Length: 327
Image (cartoon, rainbow, N blue to C red; front, side, top):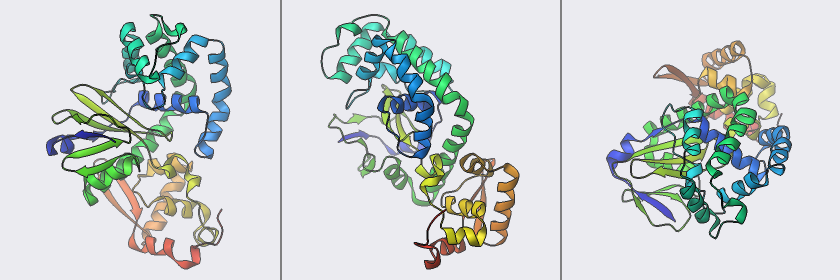
């Protein structure tokens, strides 16, 4: 397994960062795999995969570059720079484009675990990678970015609240189940690959959520290290948490959906993004559920977060609403 050694100060200073570039690269990985994890990804692939494949069919060198860069167990370093907090997509992709061609080829031999194909023995690889990432961002991510950003914010809010409730160990264990784990002794397992441990004490450590079901690690030694993880599945695809038909009959489908989703704290705007309901409707549903004692709320910074109360948990867990069909 791969793990990082870090001191307590590094962990305390660590933070969550949202990045349009990281979301774009995760979307490129999904396009490359072509396999959806849930109906939401299936609809997105149906809309964008044919054009993506047509583009690569017309550009065999870039198609080979993608296959080489997204290796079986390693991603070419030059194509995944570690974004800084607040850095725009354009700023990060400019770093991809300015990568040294010789270094890019060397990184590809690592991700391929072998020699480069002849078609990749060229100096325009960074520019080709940047152009493809710009295509993915412009055509397949930017039109949805506002909604995706709110989903990512909801995930960060939920995990930040969990830090205050259960400490960092519980949060780290949940980022990429089966991959990330707090090992104790100031060790953070970051994946299952047998790579030498890295000492990152004193470096900047960031956690970056993405909406596609993927994840990876990146770094700019020795200053910055990032762990990219897929945000909570119910946020990216609300249908993954079915709403019992009997609960919908009692509360109404929209109100029941909100109650089911609020096992993790969310703000009003985040619920709007996740459910697709209008802002006014979500606000009314929240007030009714709050007045009924099924929700609780608290302020975190500028946001007011809602979550299920003990009474709401009891209602969801009631035998009446188990195994009675869904809507």
